[in-house]
Image (cartoon, rainbow, N blue to C red; front, side, top):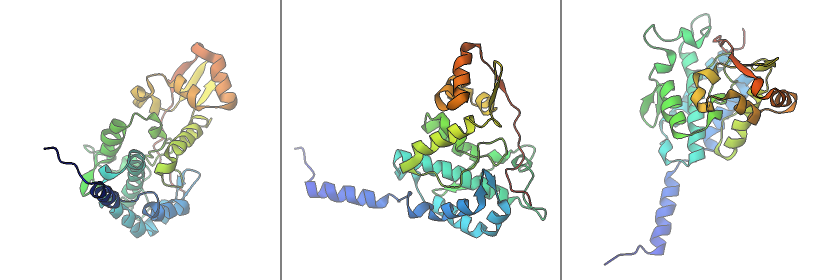
Length: 253
């Protein structure tokens, strides 16, 4: 005989499940938001200031470690992992301070055999991850979303800037579109000379994420005169990749 679950039991089960899922859009990011607003401006990071507030950053990272992102809704989970990548990247820089301050480049961290992106130190739900695992094995694998490349920040000058706010589920689409358009429309980072479109090396390293067609991605996410020039150039436009500046995106002291 097939048994049915009484309605009040179903309601109770749903309530218990909802209560077990952590809220990650309000108080969860409050502390991290304050740190970003205090120590990030115009894409540049005050790592010395972050170092003074490292205990507050550690408290936020502890919250990441105590959260099971698989219990979150899709947009909450995406925002969670982007924030995790960015906050743990800041932590990696702070962990490598010397008497002279932060390293001149994130690439100075690690060893000849281990890049900074392959150091297992980022704890989420009790498990240690590398930054590469968060970006490539989790974010890029779970979401077909090329705009994430303009949200995750590698602590370098050529990297899309770190914004002074957390990514949040309620605003994630608008935030991703905003940072993507800001990066693509910045003539210091991408520009057209004649029929040659000079673009970030991001489009070379992750070509498949952009269907190996940077121009079409630019046409979809640019505006104004720049977009008009791209439309006018049409199929005659060629693409050339710019050198990447790995210098630290830190405020000079």
